[in-house]
Image (cartoon, rainbow, N blue to C red; front, side, top):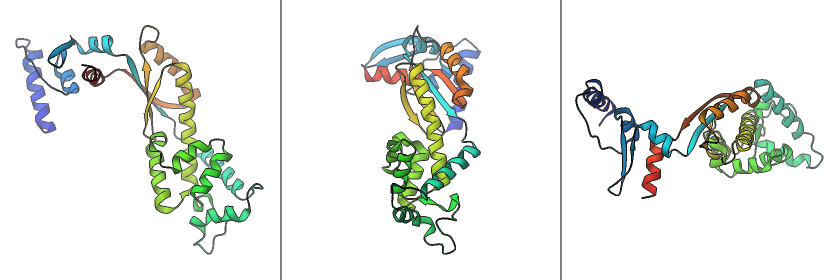
Length: 263
């Protein structure tokens, strides 16, 4: 059923069962969003047995064992980005522990084919970092494992932004310095948030990161309410550099999947 027809049927069912209040409708569906939109009471059946029944909110309170948190950090500050580019660029041309020739070889990716540009006068935007150079920079900045995940294509830990950079590294043989620096600063913001979440809410579980926001599952019970989490995050929001965040109870989809996985 296409979306327009689906909305039409939802409207018909809702009008019959809820607004007029004279008709009872029994709806069978695998769509929890449909059930929540149309039903005042929901029952979940697994293996022919009714496992639970109640209002959507009752099911969330009774069987939802975690909170779902999504956090989006503030965008990278342009001054911070410019400063990091400058620090890396200065480091590239003044490394006593590495031969100068090896550093210049790494930089040939983007400036080697331009006769009018030399390594010393190249702007940050004209410098492209090879895989070896990226690993070395990660070591300088104190987190070699982070960049190793990037160059190895470990997209689970790097997110969508990191996935794009990994593909660019394979395709072009290098990543422009400003783009790498923006990725690094973004990862730093996520690292600060992750440290805060893990220390503030023991048992918190990392779920995913799309490069713009990160999702967690937080334990939910008498010791940790929705209001407690909201208050704690809001008090530390500015210090953590959080642009926006959302917090919700377990979805009906999650509860349904839990019952289905444990017949």
